[in-house]
Image (cartoon, rainbow, N blue to C red):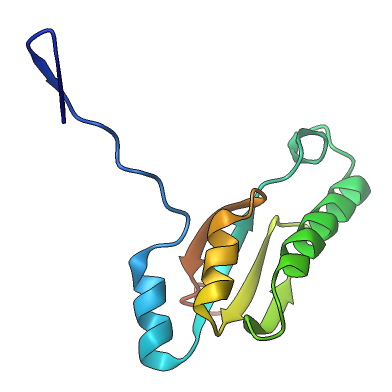
Length: 119
């Protein structure tokens, strides 16, 4: 907290893409299944983006993120063609740290699964 001209100003909390619950889950279970939300370059993200080019852009960003992880960081991956995201089973704290620091990773959430409606 800072005091400026008689007013107290609270400094914002540092943002985190990966919460502590992921590290705790990894320590407790030896793995954690996550959804990794990716940031697309502007030319692939807009409503006017060509669908084929958007899929190529998504695949490229997925490749870039996966290239930074090692085989000892994750054990499974599910990639999506038209959604800038993928599901990973992370098996190392280094893998979580890599996702946290990667510029193309927007956010990491727990994959709780089962969100579909019964058919």
